[in-house]
Length: 153
Image (tube, one colour):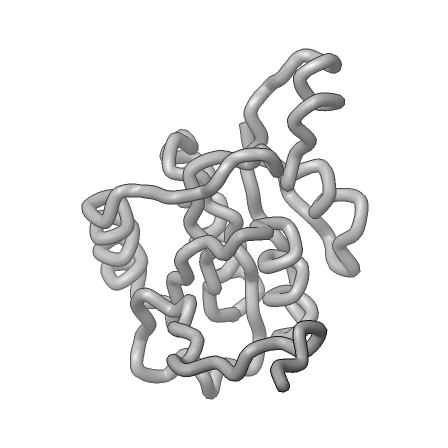
């Protein structure tokens, strides 16, 4: 007899969200989290790198396409490779994660798990009606973060 209320056993392991990382990232004592939307201006990445250097911290990045809660967040691999190259050039310890289904929770969990000093992110302007209809991961991070959040425009 089949138990229709229990979850089926997982046949494959859940893939890691980590796309790239420097060798010493897991030993980093301090962390700055970067919520990096692929259409962010260069100033967002520059601010995150500057902040990580000031805090003497590693930079853990979640890269995503959109901050709307109603749309999947996929992005091009080439954009991620450019980001990884820039982080490697910075000389910081770093990690880049692909976005999960709930970007806001992923950013907040990453900040909480590594006791982040700061979250750096950009926000796209939306009308109040669009915010109401689509929601915003950025708004949720700002409201629920336990560490300071720097919004770069």
